[in-house]
Length: 192
Image (cartoon, rainbow, N blue to C red; front, side, top):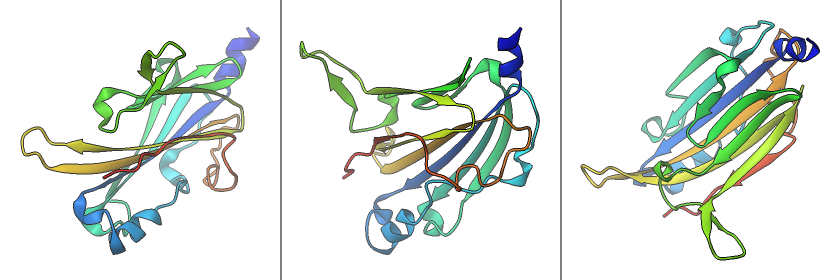
């Protein structure tokens, strides 16, 4: 009974900062503006507050189309925590002590591929697992280049996933901006 009660009194907050650009945004002023996009944002008020088993998801999308002046669109969602959460390379699930983030490279995530080699020379996708205790958070960052199969046009994307566990029903707007993450996992390639 204690386990069910402890899981039911926490919320998982996921903040996704997704940046997209094309060749015109690789260097110069556009790159300077892109590099100013914060790695953590203030959470919107409409994120809500609720005691229970929920994932509160804040998505913020940025683009070269407005020279990264502000987000081009965003969304706020509330999901049932029992179903877990998946966004591209990141999956998050509730655990007895908080939450667990798994980051695993997928081929659909563009290039360059992120592989690791074992002692026998065999390869497998890069991966990282972190247990996040209550009232802590962690960050995963990755980037890649993509090519449109129809036109051959290519573009770049970077994603920041901030994931935290909150025991309070009221989610502080500054949860990700008031402190540093307990862990940061980076898969940032030099993109050409």
